[in-house]
Image (cartoon, rainbow, N blue to C red):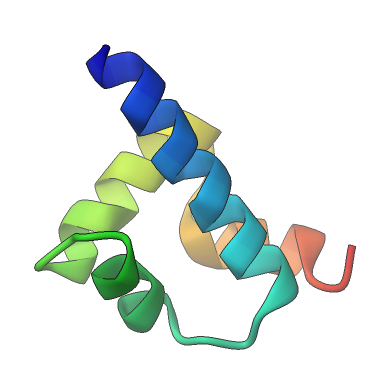
Length: 61
């Protein structure tokens, strides 16, 4: 069950990174991460790239 929740959180993070200008730290807090560094590690593990790199590659997509 945890993998389903993690996949949903990662998908929402991708959506927010691609379609908003919110800072990564704000997105991290919105998704329940106390520390942005933990969000960065989580996101990289699930997406294969850092939040910043994902945003650059997908902004406006």
